[in-house]
Image 1: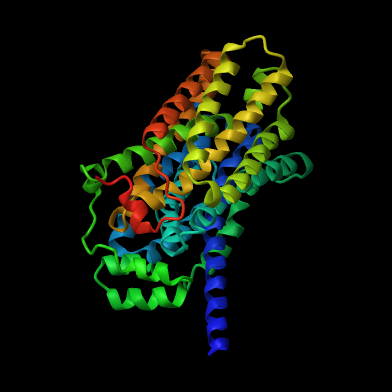
Image 2: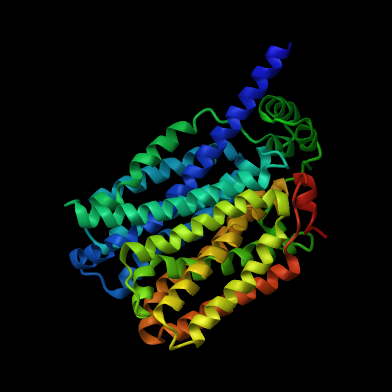
Length: 439
């Protein structure tokens, strides 16, 4: 009997590691396709004759794709289940990523990267909810936060690898962009055989299946028991704006928007931004900002289930708003001071950005968990896409100071909103966390 119990425990632990791998892999791909653009921007511009408009569109294409893919994917995952969407999104990514090898015009490259964004958007809307529905409460924040570690690692590795491939090899930009295809194929294959969410099954009235999967894959009896507290009502998109859930929708959407808008704009064009302040960009600048951000995410993941969510969400946003304001207002600051301020911004911004991968899966109930996450992701990508698209224009026409003050204002709005609404969900069951912002 003891041996059977040990085998079951080992199986469940292995399953959770597999879940972490496939979910983190999806986030790694998202960071990778965004980070790989910066190093090849010069050859892209020269080969395709890109205008600044096309340059911004191609960089922001995946972000706009997420805007469409995440709410549609979320709706489908709540209606048809998490499992089929989890395979479909990676299949689409494999196809779109492979198409990068054959693009021959700015328009086609934009469309291909838009499709990749649609796939990533679907991944956002189903991946984090699926992890939250399997993870034990005492480790849920850490396990979901690991996916953000993968995102920043993907962005940094892509930037470094792209920079090296551009300068040390004769590979063309098509091949460099297409390097994401191999990992996408691996992730697609490893997703076969994953189970459906027991919480979704219970919500659909399929209690026996839900109990069987919960017993087979969940590690703690409390988590299995909590599945039986799920409602069996069907979710709708309109429920996100009902009197019961509008606070959760407002908080998650706008917190995410204000967290990513400044970061995406500055990190994607790190080389350009740093040069505007008299700093050498290149590999050291782009990778430096990403490396600092990665360190902050790792620290946040280690702390999140110990110190809680709010302390890692609210204070860092006030700090980032102040840092960007100082950069914007101190026009004659020495370059080394500006660099330190940018690195500090990257660190604190990454801390609360980690929570954008945790809160959505916790504050929405099962019947709208995926569509709520998808809607929030779409709203966030309006900010990220617009910031990435407009930053080159703003730096050229408004100047660095005004551009940084606008970014500071966005961070300030996020800080005030989180001060008001950010809940504390540490150690609570999903039933409890989903009730936190419901009235």
